[in-house]
Length: 224
Ligand SMILES: Nc1ccn([C@@H]2O[C@H](COP(=O)(O)OP(=O)(O)OP(=O)(O)O)[C@@H](O)[C@H]2O)c(=O)n1
Ligand SMILES: C[C@](O)(CO)[C@H](O)COP(=O)(O)O
Image (cartoon, rainbow, N blue to C red; front, side, top):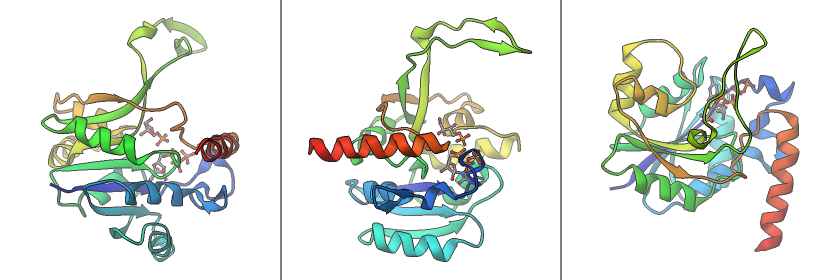
């Protein structure tokens, strides 16, 4: 069965500074173009829904037409929070499972997307993640209050592949925010599998991350 996908790209890029990070130049392409091209190469992809900031739908339709011309795509307006944008995308999909991806993660690969889709089959979902390498502390009021066991800690990435209806049912339980889709499913007691992602599948959040992404892309191209 084809799997639909949602690329969320409607954020305000606040931590990135004044510019919009999703159309920032990355190795000669708009940043989001790399995710669009990666999803176009995914075997068994259904419809690709790009969630754009309200008023920028036409701009992102042109980007999708340019960078993933061979897939069925739709562009819809996002909302105030990531979870609102994910919901707008999911309501436009029809497949049982949907792969949700941050447009701010340009180095995702078709292989990781396919592995995550495969891992989700028969489960509530599956997410890409990597084991943390720093020791993590829980901090309140500037003081350490917890020393989580590092061996149990993973940094969540995207894609996050979820049962579409379960995500929508969980979202309807409360308007409280969740920062990722696995957390949304956990509201129903549904826990996702984890697929080992890649440390270069970074999220461009700050200007430094764009420089890192460019270096990683150059290294990837050189290794071809
Ligand atoms: N209302 C929102 C918020 C976020 N996103 C998307 O969710 C992904 C992860 O969010 P993040 O990296 O935090 O992007 P921003 O919210 O734009 O960043 P900031 O918090 O710095 O404003 C991004 O692709 C972003 O465009 C979205 O579609 N709609
Ligand atoms: C979904 C995510 O990328 C997993 O790490 C992350 O939670 C997104 O957080 P953001 O603050 O919306 O960038």
